[in-house]
Amino acid sequence: MATTMSSREVLERFPAGGPRGSWPAEEYAAAQRAQGVNAQVVMDLRTDQFLVVTDTTTQ
Image 1: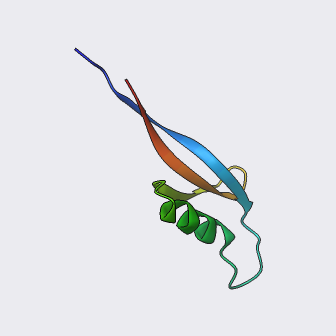
Image 2: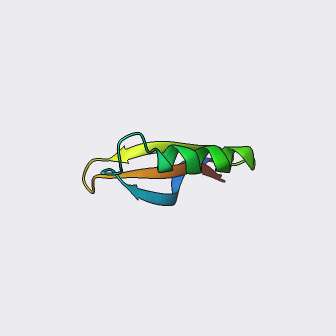
C-alpha cells in the first residue's frame, strides 16, 4: 500500500508592503503557471510576506 503526502515548496518570498497597485507575487506566480508550475500565492502573517508556493507530492 502506497502512502502519498502533499507538502508545499516555497518558490519565492515578497514583502507585503509593496507599492499600491503593485502585485509582484501574483505576477511571479502567473509566470510560473505559464511554465507549467502549479504556483499559488499565500500570505504568511507571521513574517508579513506573500509566498509563492507549489504543492509537491511524495510517495
